[in-house]
Length: 230
Image (cartoon, rainbow, N blue to C red):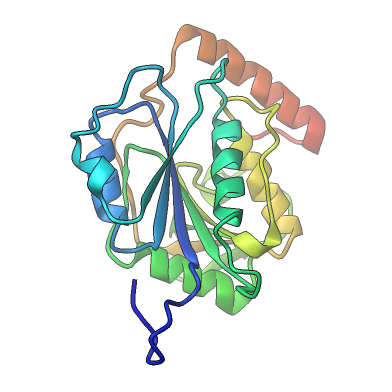
């Protein structure tokens, strides 16, 4: 982190949350993040004892939270990270940006700064990259059924001061859809063209019980919002 001309360290404003059970891809994920943020909050979700000799544990700005509660709940993990970030915010900060990243995602250089600038300039509540249009698309209306216009749940950013949180009844799927529509109602969700992230293992951790849970999550989302998640 840089130091101001008066010698004071500026307020922390750039955060990332990365839930993980310790997959080997975590190192690459964090290495792509570490120079783009002030603090990375790793939410450790495995009952396995982490290897503290791993490079992850010595990376600058990495904070580790442990959540061994069962059943698995990715919405809870995100909320834990968001609540923890709030404890690091200066009372006079006014605004901050928090990225939520899967541990199998590699963000490109400039990703964080571009999304943060987009959120600030347009007073958005959330943003993601990978938009298929040539210019920024801002969504403020409910989901129109086009899956390419919804928040990318594996790598997105929230305006921290807007205090969005995920519905933890959405255990494995649709928590990102829930945030998407909350963001649309709270100022808008922006889709930035380009800056494609590398998503190594889409749905790579699905198990039979999580497949069942995903169906329940989709039904709950549709009942809550009045339209399907996909």
